[in-house]
Image (cartoon, rainbow, N blue to C red):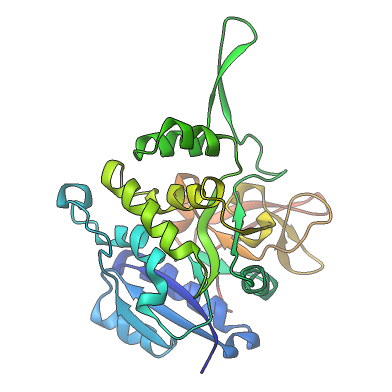
Length: 300
């Protein structure tokens, strides 16, 4: 029995991305000791048949927390915002659970090892959207000279999701935890607290982003243990990536140009890449050159 598992979710529209994620995991020999499980949020029978030959198990995602139909509007893939908080329920008997969004792929197994190592001793292992290469992490609305109104993702989402002003302020200036990749042990206390906060978020706010603000509140307000990993473990600022010709891999833009662990096409800025696997991106190299390349995973 494999102790650790990597889990993702997709509908039929994200199948190609999901399949690339699975292939990017399996290309590493180390993956032979790690299970891969899939939550189905609208895959076709043919798609599930293809995946079943590559992964350990596929199960249908559910609305683990009741959500009004007017919020769902037929978007069954939004189950990803709920079901990821219930992973041990879907796939029991594993020790460590690593979630990776379907629009991501694994470039270095080191990141996988860090996620699993980081969640030991019942901690959440996760990275943030704050990094030296990412630039602005807060917005300020300036008025009356030197006075400004600070705007943060955590504060905005906490308020719109029905959390108190006190909680919203407590999490407002904290680095935003990116739930697109995270790891937890089966017995970690985070699951129950996260689910509780998620119920609050889903009751008052939108489904999209609910699981992320719920986890940020779980860590920063409920003060559960966390191991914050480097941004290269879950890299989302795709336009800032660089390519190392000598090592033939994608790296951070600044020294020491560490190899990117997970390439994550999150956000509207990456729509073109997500929608077209043959999209050509202009990528700077560490030696000052610029090349054109496809950034979607290709095992060839």
